[in-house]
Image (tube, rainbow, N blue to C red):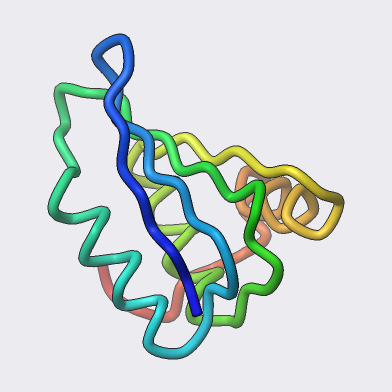
Length: 96
């Protein structure tokens, strides 16, 4: 299960994900992101409370990052995934 909330602060939009980013929840996060995606505003994705990410979730996070979404993480598991994405070590198999 994945809980997704949205908040607006100081001209930027923050998505907060809590739970497991896997299976059908990957599509839910993608739809939430696409609804708020705006090239003129900074979008942040807070992953501090995400406990698991499958390969499809990693692919989505990498695409979001490439499109300018700032990724923030809490614990060592998510920090490692975010660092891999930021250094280009997670590649999406899906087209843009």
